Image (cartoon, rainbow, N blue to C red; front, side):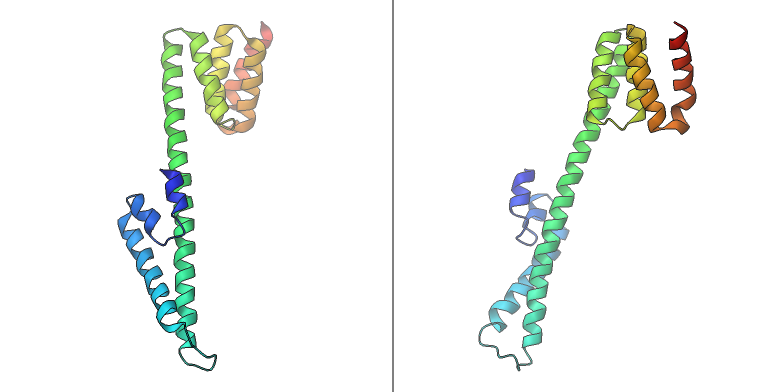
Length: 172
């Protein structure tokens, strides 16, 4: 659906109607139609000294503005759809990982948390979860690496816990 919306985005308002955002689509379509109407009706046969030239320029500007606004709005909407999809996938992986960790299935939990880190490498929380499951699994090198990375990403939230975990791992 997002590719269809992107393909029709130069037509003012059409992609917005396809996406279910009817009021926005109506406004863009009305602006585009006013511009197109002004260009088609007033455009032919105008001489530069004509007073209607201003109207034609404004009509072209309205048409171009509506097309540009439609494209930008559609691209922004498609990017937000992708962000929502990413957030749902992250939430699903986090829930599955925590569920497996609580059941003491640290192998599967580590797989879920690893996939979570691959989706968003800059998320400190995911790194802490992965590091904790790797520590339980016995992978001290992987746990150390992820505890350090989590503390570097969000030192205000995880510096103490990561520091404690790293001290504990170095004592072993």
